[in-house]
Amino acid sequence: MMKNYLFLLLLVPLVILIILALPGKRSFRFSGEAILEQIGQNTHIISVHKFKEFKAGEPGIQLVDLRGVTEFANGHLPEAVNMPAESLGTGEIYRFFKGMESDHVLYSGETYQAEKYWIIFRQMGIENLYVLETGYALDSLIMNWDSESSRRILVDEDPSFTFQPDTAFNY
Amino acid sequence: MFSIRFQVSAILVLLSGLIILLPDARQSSGELNVPGMLEVMNESGQFLTVDQVARMVVYEDTSILLVDVRDTEAYRAVHIPGAINLPVSDILNPDWSGYLDDPVVRPVFYSNGNTMAGEAWMICTQKGYTGSYIMKGGMNEWYREVMESTFEGERITAADNATFEVRYRARKFFNRMNSTPDSLKTAFLEVKRKKEDDLVGGCE
View 1 (cartoon, rainbow over the protein chains, first blue to last red):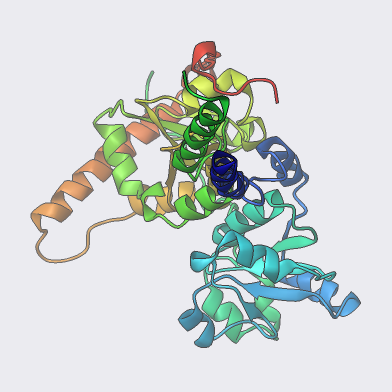
View 2: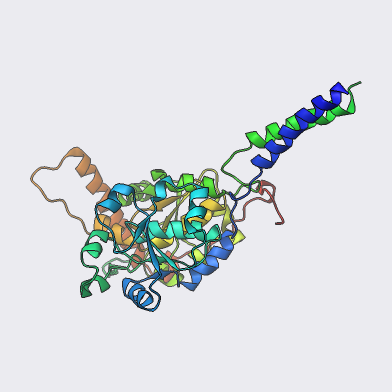
């Protein structure tokens, strides 16, 4: 009889431990292949001009600033909320986006930084996400948000060079 | 000899010990999971500067492989000497897995800016091809720093002198290589699959 209780006492905590250690929300919902397909459609990075159009049609659209708390406090785009990306845990990300129906537009110091988090959030299964094309100079974009000049932004992937072949070279 | 209960509990203890000791950041197939990705994304070691890459190109460093992730036309027009072309959309093709998941030669992704190279890095790292780099700033930065910068000042320090020597040599190499006809500067890329017995997981 005594042995039975001992066995049960051992068994129950072990089963609980095993269940806790199994991967649950930690694994990705979408594979890399699925995300590549979405990247290929090239609709996830939106320009400032397009964002303003979206905003006019859907006022609930939410800007999410992924920079640190101090950088956010020093200046950010209008009506943005801060989500410091460097200190994020899995649970925090799910809690942040939980129950939100509206679109979210991510931005960070540079476009590619925000896009990395777009990839990981999408792979976690979060819907209705975009990335704002902010170019290199976020500070000037924040200052000139309302003026026309904010529409002219250097797109990260546009080549800013032209190659001149060396005609004197004899191969 | 031992009771069946004792045996069962011993097995359970071993199992739970194994699960707890399993690396936290990876899934069973070798791919990184969410906490694992969040951790590596914040490390700064993923970037190489254009000067570091120029040095590697000039001194023919064989521990890295430059990977141009732009489309084929952009690659054919101009690319860094020694780079192979794997457009982002084709990066997970198993035919190229041997290039991207090599224990000795580490891939360095570059595009015109940072965005496409960042995409390639994210996708490959998540697949478990860890140890790849991004050339920070891409071709735009390469042109600004390596191709077009000139030294300004009265006296040049030894460090600056070394930097500019590498830049001038890289510049010359880059121009000569890209001035050759397309047939000479773009080689046929050989299929290189990762060895089957190295693969973890399988049908999923």
